[in-house]
Image (cartoon, rainbow, N blue to C red; front, side, top):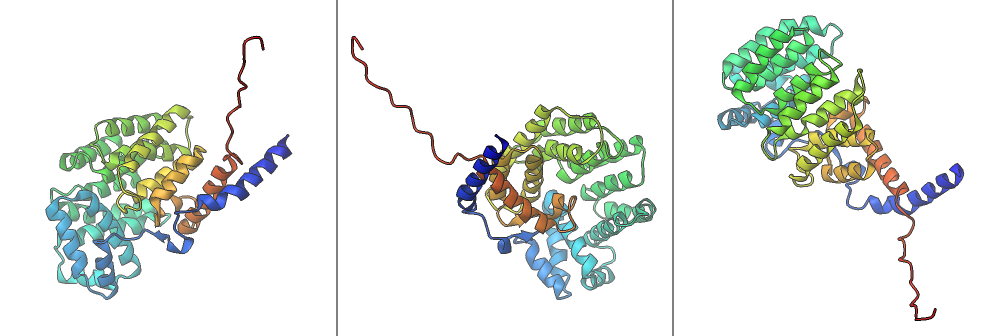
Length: 338
């Protein structure tokens, strides 16, 4: 019987896998952490050692109070500065008190610290940089996201975390970056538990506005559970977290870079839950917008991992697709006396 099932699955794969690839971008069209239309010119200019567009971009996010974009652009610019530092060093030399340069500097310091086995000590050394970024623009919640990450890495007490959380939410009560940092702190892998982590994420999602990335927070808690230690979580709770994130994803256009990281996170969760068709739906919505997170959690080649799992999802859906449609049963007309 097992052999029969295997043969049927193989036949289904051969029949349907090619069809399921229709509409998906080719492997060479998928980009990792592709910048949006605002960030791309800033990165191109930085590659020519011109920091002006990057400075103007972050200044615009500050003036617009576009905190989610400010957080994303800060992280991307810091990543670029790690590999191409000249443009950023020129920015700091010319504008040492620029609040946007100070924010990227703090982000860069934390990113470097987390890569070291001695991250706790290096993070402590970075504390003045976070303070300088926070003082540079007091209404900005992004330095407080850095402070929450810093608290996690330096083994800060719950009282310290709670005080930082009040500062963060006092500036932007629904800032996704601050909430994801809190989920990590409260996870079983750090200083909380799955129970506390899910409760926090679900409560935040209940109060989020339509279209807010906060609706993906329970899926973030599900990721922490699926990749970390601790007691079991009911399957119903994991499915509910995925369903809420699916609803959020559906509110954005396919290929939109803004929810790309959330869609990649959701795809990973759906794969772990073996919800293959839902995972394929998200892969289609992701389009060419692969992100390092969460694939860098499981591979040194996040883009290759995404492409490999994308193929695996298609195979799983193909294996579950019937070889042919079922035909309705024919009914014979009856007559009196039959």
